[in-house]
Amino acid sequence: MTAYVIVRADVTDLDKWKEYAVAAGPTSAPYGGKYIARGGAVEGLENFEDEGKRVVILEFPDMDSARNWYNSEEYTAARKIRESAGKAHFMIVEGYDG
Image (cartoon, rainbow, N blue to C red; front, side):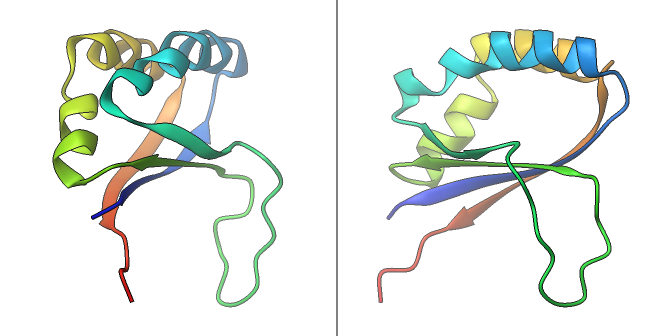
């Protein structure tokens, strides 16, 4: 079943974050991942208190693919760059099959 990695990030060093984005961008494709949203405009609708945080959503074929990407050597290298660019919260959410 499809899985989504959802990231909420508080960027503190934009230049470093841009470096991270370049490094992280291509790492998801070998695991079947694709970006659904990547830092675009965010509008709160209800009980929204995280204004200013960047939101990223990636889609993967399943939970295992998402985990394998996150723990991959390629993404781990990018993650090291991200750690000095701000604080990010990651989660994997299983899709809904109706």
